[in-house]
Length: 117
Image (cartoon, rainbow, N blue to C red; front, side, top):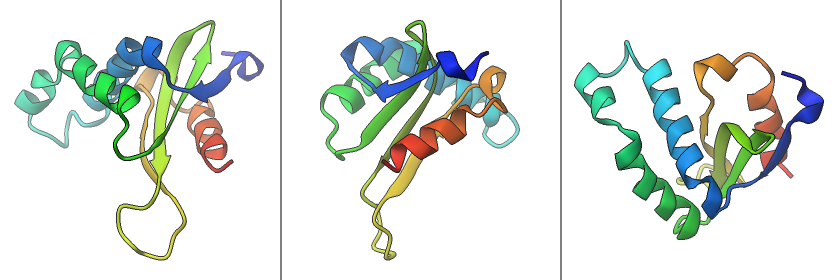
């Protein structure tokens, strides 16, 4: 992967299915030994698409939802916004999902830096 070819932009309605796929893949990659297998197996693309539709289109929490793309393919996502608790911070990184195959390539760093802008 050539980092100069990656772009970071806000997630949009057309990204719903890809965001759901990245979410499911990241959780199944990352939490295999930390969560019961039945919980991870029940996290399916079909279940996550409506959730991501609500997250992106309704966005009740007012999050900044970013994705890192190359040729319209989504490689990772982040969600940031107002802190959930009053701990004296201006913002909080709520989540970052990058599938194992795309980790350790600087994508998380790129998303984090963009979320600070």
